[in-house]
Length: 325
Image (cartoon, rainbow, N blue to C red; front, side, top):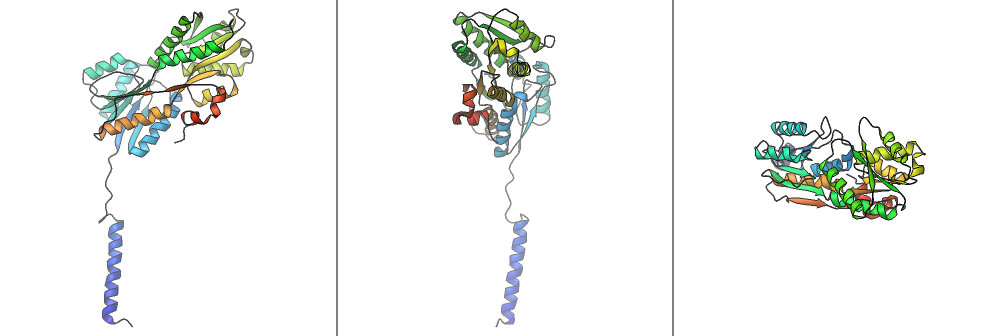
């Protein structure tokens, strides 16, 4: 039997446990340390995020792991430099702790840096531009990529085939400039003649392809300058079987879902792909490390791979082509 004194002690002990539980559950004793949420703005050079699907997966993954709030911003008009600078200024004024930028115009960005208009840490995509606020860059060698793609095409194409380059009519990104340079240098090094057809708003892609097929050559091989043109060319070939009668190869760059689907269906012969998931992930990591006072690394050069249909099922390319958040 427990006496009155024992019952009183037991009651006091239970009251103590209840109070202790309530204090713990309301953070009065054990308080979780507040972790700072870093505000990061990603401003690309495009008006659409179609070519950034894997990049965004990597970006979002890093944001979750590193407690960052990442805003992904597209332009109203593709490759519009003044608009990009305006967006950079706006995001900086709205409290962005760091910026990740795919520059439209390196000179305009350099001017903004030189004039101290950009005052927050900045990571660049596809550019080696240097400056006080540039804390790192992530890019790939698009010139070598163009050379590699062209070399693969030359090994496979019929000897009597005509090479057609489908190119942007007006603006092209810095990656597009380097990629095209690599293509034309490799064609010239091998003494291979080519024809350039410009795709613009006034000349529809199908009309451009029809021009190529009307050139009188029995075989045509197409090199596309951008992921958008590669996707549109494959879509046109898929819609009209007559196109594929003369075309014996369609090549380009990019690893969007649409491009990989057309590659799997045989409408694209080969594409050069970069680990875009890794680019998105590491760009956010660079920004957060800098904000935490750690060394984030100055430059990261991403490898690229030439991919054909049979490579889609290979284990070594799975993470690059089909990343899972």
